[in-house]
Length: 293
Image (cartoon, rainbow, N blue to C red; front, side, top):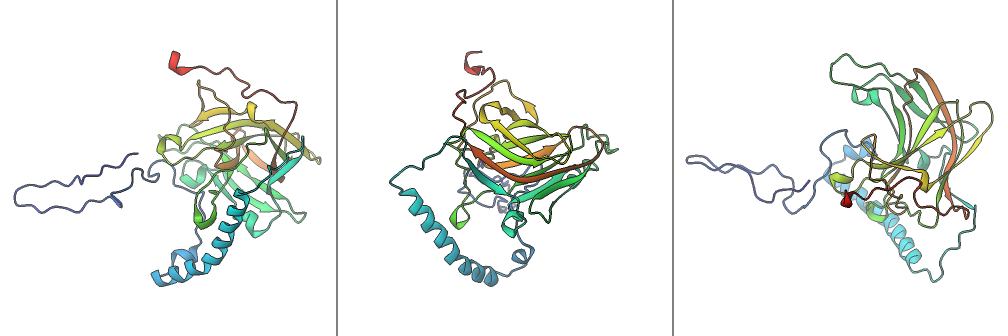
């Protein structure tokens, strides 16, 4: 959404010039202000209540930690040798071990959070050191005459940031598959790889693929190639299918929306990536060149 640089206040005879209501005039883009509120950034309540001086002191305390992280990033950027990736070797991105760092990486949402349904969801951690995504899915529609679909629960990672709170993406370039170790309840979930860019045209871009669980006491090791992910926007599959860009993924997420009313439970050990040397395709679906149509 491009911001107009000229004030839109009206000037007429006998009236005074009003102050523009734009927060900044030098920005060429503005944050998301429509649709669902942003829920992927965790802000502690005590930080909201701090005064200006308190925020300044808190910022000074973070300089040492952020500076150390910045030096680590600089050192990794000047590596002389490229990291060797062995076939079928797994790199764990998210380990559901119940630590504070793990809890702060995930956010739980459902339709009832936005007064669009009656589903409930929670993310807890078991004593054995795994995550438990559970709740109740309810596809019943609110009687307001505006909501046409209801019944979804999901967990999504918060915004990934580098040093000094700069937004960044996940670097998945050497790999070609997503792996999960889960224990489900027999229901079908959906794995989401989101691409929330700076401009509003990228807010709803994501790649999805189904994740079928068998139920029972046994763990499943699920491997999904990048080429199998379906390119979609706002819940609809796009005709212009394209390969998943491994260096533009900003969020990971898991969604349940199978329209079956009842409780659900998905136990998660870890989510990672791997390189499968037997995979050669970039996209498993027909790609239509929209410029020639």
